[in-house]
Image 1 (cartoon, rainbow, N blue to C red):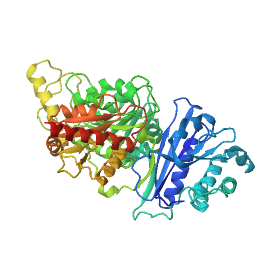
Image 2: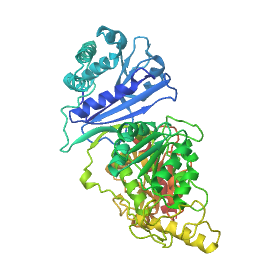
Image 3: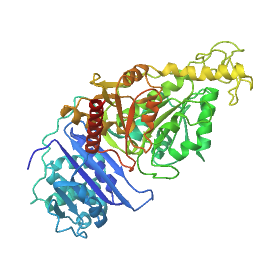
Image 4: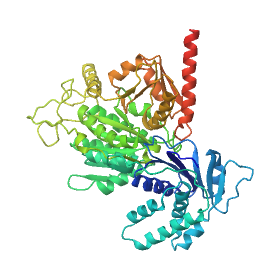
Length: 569
């Protein structure tokens, strides 16, 4: 048995069998003692049943992606075994329900039957099958059973009967595999020297919005954005705070625009189909210059598409959701940690330029659970609204620059008009006012151009530029490529529109910018090309995240082709 720095465990079965819970349980127990972990979940769109699988990657160092190959597969039924066994690495282990008959011709894996449900019933708690699995895993990955027992004791504190049943399930699982050889040895964890929290992307985004000062949340339930609505209904409480479930996405967007008009920091969250319905309302916020934040947790599309799978295919729609000349600021989170900061920056941007801001998340981020550094709130500034304090007769739309925001009922009242308007806010069809207002609305975007970006090895003439939730897999691939002495640069920002001028300048100087993204059209690559950058996309549209091994192969192909063309040229 060789020591290794990480382990990847996949749980597969039917929805309702606790498959999702199992991966999170392993990750939470591991991070609780100082390991790093990241989960990935994919499941069908029905309420119960259907093929579901999750994955937990546990390591001594920061985890960037769900992992490529699987060390241990826990298959709760035959379909799960047949579907996922080819992803298990040579020498890996498959834990099987007794009803599953493994392929005797497959000698590359060690298959072990474990009566999960029968052992759980022995504890008096039939739902303890996951704990039986954890007990067995503790043997296979040589992780002390006390890690799991301590996790159970803390999670169910005060519920002694549940703790006792789960501890017994852990013992039964360990005893079931007591004679099996461990597949790895993570060794002792190396706890980080900073405070951590284990959290999902949707939760981190919601907490970021609270820190930013959200006062009004109006949302309609839609996968995979619904947990944000649930969070706000439970936590956006107190005087001056309001969270409510709308009857439609159109009601949600008009509600937050109205709240923004009244001076409140407001937000809604949706996914692709709902975001499309919000297009006209977002256009109203752009036209009337009303701050608000719209979260689009992307999923596979179009139409109903793949409601519980991941994709990065709403970018172009997010930048131009409204008809006519409108270009909406977009921030795309790339990690669970960035979900928190994306929310804070989105509210700050909305106040800075006085208009709607889009946050792009995606299913793989929303449902991903990961240990992250606890944000330093004192180091995360919040931009509050600059309000008008003068006298009546204020002409908010007169200047071509930002102007203080008048709050209805206070001095400086104005008309927030969705029609083209003059400097008073009154409807007009005169060309001179349409020119003035169009230039004013677009000119304000310059206020957002100082956003930071990442770069590494900038001297290289070929650059790698991911966006959104593909960041982790691409960064993992980049690190592998650099270790292979591939000369390539790294650029990244979550501030997608507008892009920082210095970043645009650097990318324009590259001979080739490679953009991995989860969509068919290569949307971000096309956006970069429209700004004079020689960008080429690596696309995938399976509903699943990139594997870093796939990216390494494809990037090497593009780099090799570029070098060959240079020689021929």
